[in-house]
Length: 97
Image 1 (cartoon, rainbow, N blue to C red):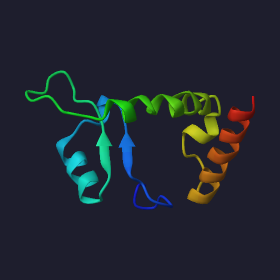
Image 2: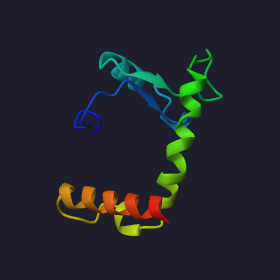
Image 3: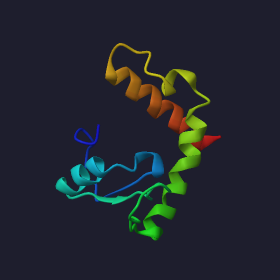
Image 4: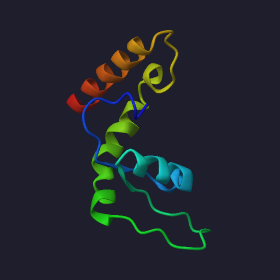
């Protein structure tokens, strides 16, 4: 999905569920700076940009609001284009209300 994203992606903020060495290495190989906190069971602590990680919460309420639209949260459409249009429409409605 990241490979298909339009524009330049400079950094990626995610929660600790995405804490994996292979993912961090893949992001760095694509020149994307990960802002992902480490899990508590890591032996060596992971450094992250706290300012960028805080910016994740600007998007989080919108994503949570999108879950109100069941069709857009699960991909029930046959074509990816239709699924993308459903997500875009739900995002417009969620930000408008």
